[in-house]
Length: 197
Image (cartoon, rainbow, N blue to C red; front, side, top):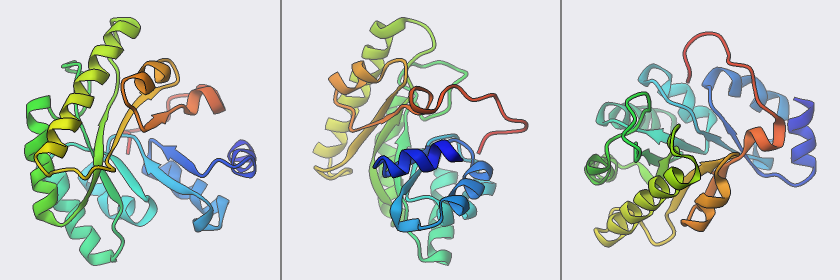
């Protein structure tokens, strides 16, 4: 937590967390909720949607109609309305979460009809293929973002959440508005026990 506080003291105002359980302790320890915008960047199970809505300002991993419906229900109960990014599996890797590219626009439509706030699209670069593979994946997401804006499913200010510590420069070249560089800032973390968020 000392490194997180140091980052905030240096001016960092957007922090991401992969797990709902870990975010609870960190957000409580930071204190002033207005000082930081918290982003959930890990996979979100529907049974954690209520807590995610209470904790996070933005959720980057919306990947199913079932999750959209659960988030909408929890948002109505709580009165909080975190912005949502649709997670798209642009690499086609079976080990990754996210909707297939052809499912992104229909899921954005479901978000709109559910009353949620769609903030943009998110993807994770491929495990194989290096920076060239990452570029292809990010470019695919950027094209989907253009299609979604043209269809009126995303506003002109919508974002592209893509790129991590190993490939964020390529992501920025391909239009990323949010990069997830926790490892570069805080070092690699040990895998935690149990399921992700």
